[in-house]
Image 1: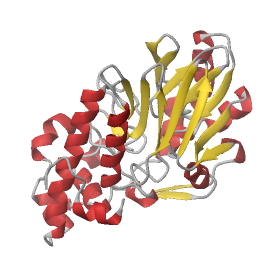
Image 2 (image 1 turned 135 degrees about the vertical axis):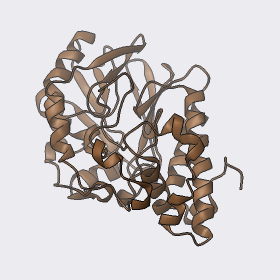
Image 3 (image 1 turned 180 degrees about the vertical axis):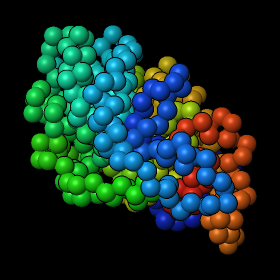
Image 4 (image 1 turned 45 degrees about the horizontal axis):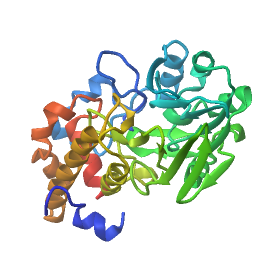
Length: 337
């Protein structure tokens, strides 16, 4: 099977988050859902079915959110990339009011409010969640209660947030979110908004990073927020416990590639700003590794044997610098095929 094909097993099934992008060094690093540094050194022979238990990542996110600055990068005249703790955010400004993609940590809300107020005087009107994970939604309630944001997301995001959830790979159990955190409007497949003289297309990407992922494409601005189906520069987390699959990640990357051209600015859920070339390289990496792991798994190899085969070896120098070790990424691919 060619590397650019979805694996046979996933096709028949029709199918970090490594965590918040806390800038601890020049390279953006996964944070809230990443294994700690000591755990990251575990030998390959351990063949982890999941990451070792670590600290309370939600509390870590909130602690960091209270003090971490928010970096602002202008993408277009009315579109800005915001990077602090949590996933990458995009803000749109204009006479209809501000639109924001994702909400970071609840403790970052006052800093986020101050940052948004410096962009233009109009109030925050709309908040769109790319998916349900708390490093993208923890600030929902604060932005809704304190700033009046109306929240839009896929219907599965509301379902996930409104009930207790477990991120099995990271041994993380989460309580249901308060009502004020929940999206007030949901959709199932596609949605179209017209805000601040731009067309904004929202599209569902099933069984990808989770079962809640959407892209947000600013048509006139030619800016695409891909959410956590795109981790730029490092191996991505795939939350198999809430519907994520490696083949869904590949299909989602294909969906975003079809929307983009050579001038599109593509915002990943985590990592530096990307473009079509960066997303293509990421997609090809995912597809190649998925094909290799699928061949091992369908050939009867156990997870431990698949890890020992080192199917990511030629990619590790470029992609293995995040908080997920190559062995952990192989575990995620193997378990979601």
